[in-house]
Image 1 (cartoon, rainbow, N blue to C red):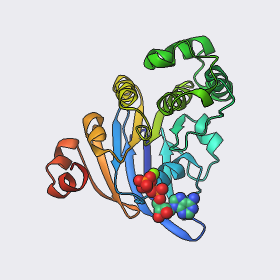
Image 2: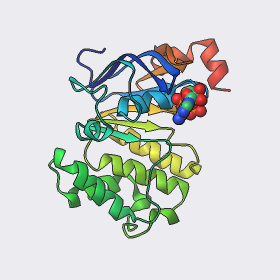
Image 3: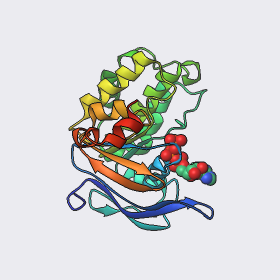
Length: 239
Ligand SMILES: Nc1ncnc2c1ncn2[C@@H]1O[C@H](COP(=O)(O)OP(=O)(O)OP(=O)(O)O)[C@@H](O)[C@H]1O
Ligand SMILES: [Mg+2]
């Protein structure tokens, strides 16, 4: 899977200060593939995404994005190479409008795609009907779910090769969770997607393959059908 994949991590080790969190993570996302990562609290899911995105520095291991080694590069360089990242913390500016978020992201990263701003905005708003007509609204006045959509729209504005999302359903009203997952189904096949969720049922519904992570390592991988046949997975994640 790793040769020829769009995104791959091999033997990824990282952590915080002296605390080692990732014990050699191997994962891969193929072209057009939607890959899920599930696992208990503290398993290292967020740390995996942060390390791939360059927010946390890898201690060792390799990360390749479309054939280019990105491990150890700064986050803004990795973003420019085509990695879209939707962090669990969202990292929005409450006093800026939706339009200002999209404009900033497009002027920082949009040059990579060559797509003009207006077309890019039309493309992302197509995916998120609730955001239409809200370009001049400050994001601090939006609901949690709307803010989550803004975070995803901002990551998509530069047409990333791979989109990584960390718990996009957390703190989001059910109707908006549906909207976000409809958007992911729409995007599926057009880019690589790496989706982290604690809500395994959501992941099993959309993913082509799922990794189960525990204590800093990948402990199982398979299609949703394969993982659902595993009694321990069923009992732990789907009750
Ligand atoms: N900024 C930090 N500084 C120190 N330790 C951290 C930091 N962030 C996470 N950790 C520790 O790293 C480990 C893995 O955390 P991580 O957030 O990657 O797990 P997770 O799988 O995303 O969990 P959750 O399901 O709760 O989001 C945990 O033991 C956590 O306490
Ligand atoms: Mg997390």
